[in-house]
Image (cartoon, rainbow, N blue to C red; front, top):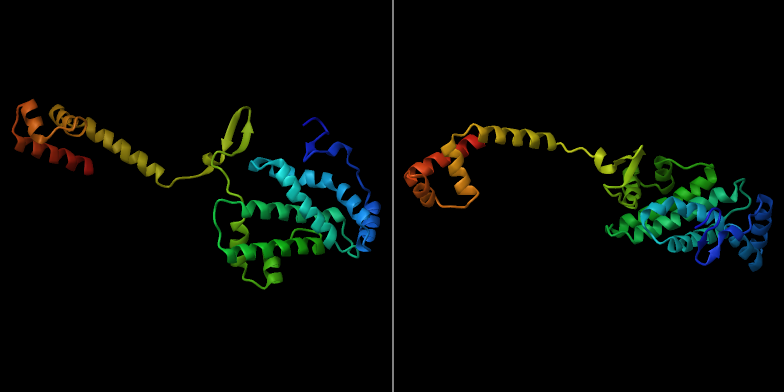
Length: 254
C-alpha cells in the first residue's frame, strides 16, 4: 500500500472516479429506470466509500479483499434500495448498509455460536437500524429500534450484543510514549486481593514454624516421603511425626 494508492481485489482505488452528489442522483434515477450502465458506473464511483468503511475493521484480522467484496455487496444493496425521493445523501444511507453487511459476515463467521432466534432478531435489528438511520438522519437509539420492531428493549440489547466481535484481552486501548495499556489492564479481579492476603498469611505461618516442623513438611510434601521414612530420618517416632504434621496443617488452615 502506498500513499493514496490502494490495490485491493486487483483494483487500483487511486484511479477510481469520484462522483458528485448531483451525478449520483442522476445515475440513481437512471438505474431505477433499468439502466445497467448507470448502475455499474454508480458502483465503481462508490468503491472508495467501501474502502473507507473496511478500514474500520482492519484490526479484526480478516482478509481485506474478503471485507472489500462483502462491502461491495452492501453497496449494491444500498444502490438497489435507496429512495431518491428522501432528502438524504446517498453516502448517509450507504455507509450503514455496508457496515451492516460486513458485520453480518463477521457474525456468521464468529466462532462463538449464537442461537438462530437471536441471530434472526439481530439481523432484523440491524435492518431496522439502517432504515431508521436513513429516515432520521442519525443513528437511532435502542428504544427506537425496539419500538420499530415491537420487540422488548432487553431482547434487542441481547441480540445486538450477540453480534459484537469478541475483543482480545491483549488488544491495545491506549499508548503513550511506548507504555501501552491493554484491555487486560482494565479488567478487575475481585479475588485477586484475597489471593494476595492468603499468600502472605501462608508465608508468615511457614516462617513461624520450628526447624523440626519445617523439615517434616519439606520431607513429607516436597520430597514425598512417608511418615515412617521421616521418623527414621529425623530420629523420632512415627506417631510424633503424625502429631507434628497435623499441628502444622492446623496452623496453616487457621
